[in-house]
Length: 66
Image 1: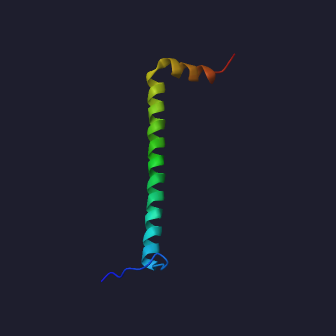
Image 2: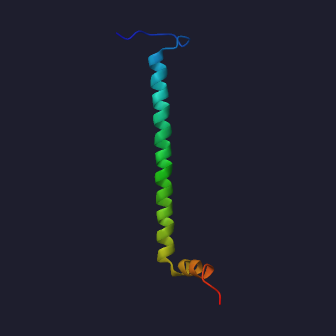
Image 3: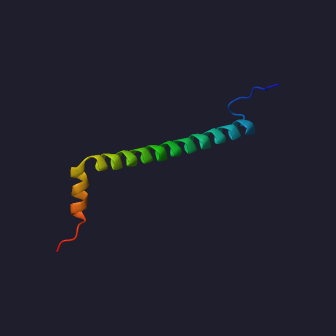
C-alpha cells in the first residue's frame, strides 16, 4: 500500500527517483546534441562536396605557392 507524505517529508524513494530521472534527462540531452552535431557536420561535408566552387576555394587556400 502506498502511503502519502507531506512535502516537508523527504521520502528517499522519491529523491532517488528524481535523481535518476534528472540523470536520464541529462544523458538524453547530451546524446541528442551529439547526434545533431554529427548530422550538421555531415550536411556541411556534403554541401562542400556537391558545390565545386566551395571545394576549389578550400583547395586554393591550402595549395603551395611557387
